[in-house]
Image (cartoon, rainbow, N blue to C red; front, side, top):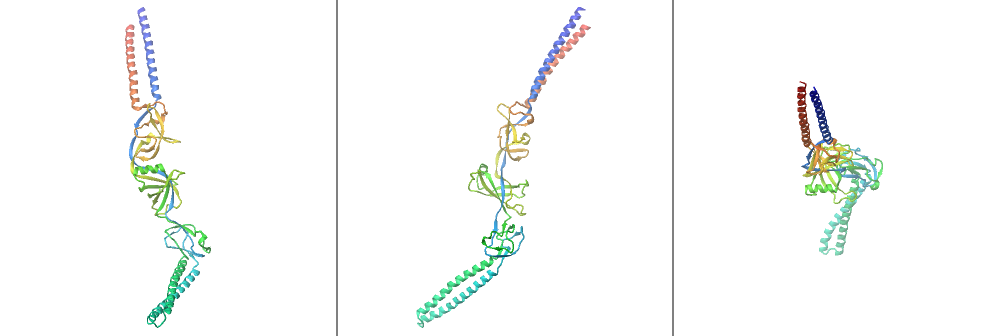
Length: 408
């Protein structure tokens, strides 16, 4: 009886000791697991590159290729108008009429003076021929011949002067018909019919050509240098796209065909110009928008998955793994996309290691657990408790057997 009591006490102590071991092992495993769970699991990938066409953006303004102010070139009353505001007109199309009577009369008078001078010249040409024959036969004095010759030369000069006066009168008469100097769209009529106009009256209206149209834009000098580096020449004709201030993209593409010969010292930009087709007259003089210019050749650029980026008020950013394998928040600038990747113009470079998943729980500078290492750690952690549990279970079974034996 006494032996049984001792055996029971030994078993109870063994069970208590085993319980303590199991508890300590569980606490140790929980602490390790908690510590493991405190570092977020992430995946890391290396930044790769793609050969892509570079693109640069800049504010832009639409300009007519021809912008012509229609002026009165003579004095007179404006008697007729042959168009409506906003009409499209062709070069040479009649727009206004200035009272023509005065200039028609002047042209008629100039024509009469010219005809009279020509008649006098013809008469003295005949006289000169006769006097030459007479002077050769000594029938008239040489002085008489010289007098007729002088008269003929005087009327010849007068004819030339009268011809100039007549052409000038005809030109002024033509100015009574004010015509469109270029194809384009007519603006607001600034002087209406019935007003007296002259050269200093200002424009009667303005015509803006509509097809093609110019778009000018100031590009940062460093971006322009990049374009020249990629294409190998400053004289390349590059493809451009225009987007209206509303955000709508213009359907036709243009060609950059001009660059200024100096950099603006105040802004550090160089003015470029592109030519756009405008068959539907959608582009209007003075409109604003944004331009996107593309390089002709491709350039090697870093790319990052769009899923690896996050955004805050300061812009897009990624997490780069530093030398100590800790994440560092880095802002990036993008210039379009290829497939599902952002093309990065600054912020990362080829070979950088960035976090691609699990960024939401990452704290810059705090340790993270790369997902492959996390899996291995989990495997190691799960193996250790299993060994101890099996040993304890054996002890339990052993004590149970002994206890049952003792009981038995």
